[in-house]
Amino acid sequence: MSESLLVVEGLVKRFPIRAGIFHRQVGEVKAVESVSFDIKSSEIFGLVGESGSGKSTVGKTLLRIYKPTKGTIQFKGRDVTKLTKETLRFFRQQAQMVFQDPKSSLNPRRSIKSTIEESLIVHKVAKNGGARKKIVADRLAMVELSPNYMYKYPSMLSGGQRQRVAIARALALDPSFIVLDEPTSALDVSVQAKVIRLLQRLQAERQMAYLFISHDLSLMRTIASRTAVMYLGRIYELAATEDLFTNPLHPYTKTLISAVPVVSAEERQMKPKKQSYGGEIPSPINPPSGCAFHPRCSLAEQVCAQELPDLAEVLPGHFVRCHIAIDALSAT
Ligand code: SF4
Image 1 (tube, helix red, strand yellow):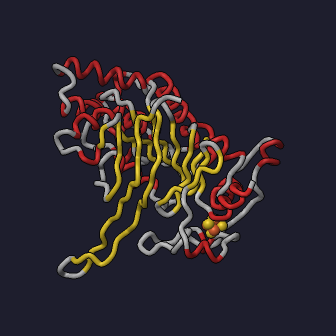
Image 2 (tube, protein in one colour):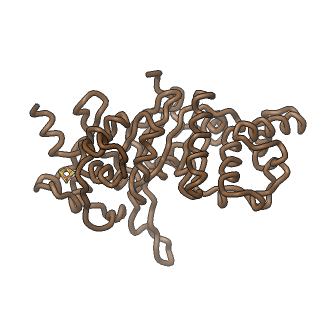
Image 3 (tube, rainbow, N blue to C red):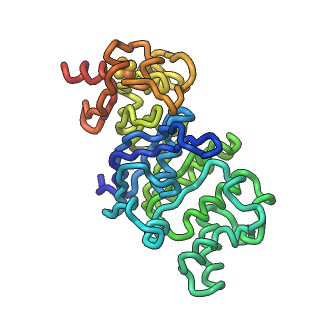
């Protein structure tokens, strides 16, 4: 595989909780805790987990929408956590984001042309209005919309068309990396597959890297080459996506996969038996000690509540954070 485009090491993001008339900090939300991974050039890297697992916060922190609390983010060899507002310009041209809900991510008062050309103006990419209009038409063509769409407003478009515009906006500066945060979950089922195919085609043609964030593990299987499973702010398993499906090692991953519908008899045989865990995901304000999954894990032992397991590479390229899985594989 090609070299790393993005290297994240020990990323932490905590949000202070303030209260009282003096607005004193009374606690913190531990949204992301010591997350490390890399994304290769032209790779689609998946991040899955339940709502509240911290996956969207990782995406937003990578793009410096949120300031990291700790850790480093190397992009093309430069640590973007150290970039000043002025030097962030280089990174912003290269790295873009597509949000979950195009209805709220597009300004209803701006025409599609104005929406797409905004970053061209900020980054002084085109010489004049005519050149910008050409780029806008080109980006609309990339997302399979005719140039006439540039004169429309978001309210005149369907959900799928709005998301295409959001993708065209992300493509405006010809980025090499896009964070896609649940890009199809707000769309009708009938248009989800079309938008996924569009994203796959664009990635293949333009050799971009994606961080693809989703709660939908079956979707990850169709799109991502490697997938990390997040739980309460940490990565608990990371592997080539096919390995994750055919040989899940973490009890949480097994539970998620056991809930994915399958059609073929072969897949049915390989799939872990249907499992469930009790209760809701615990609060990131006061996460459980040790392995954060232990209150919901049927295999939990005493050590699980006391010690956080390392994220260990137990098979080539296959990392897991579980005392039992690590012990079982190191004994073989
Ligand atoms: Fe379950 Fe213990 Fe493994 Fe955590 S470390 S997943 S509690 S067996």
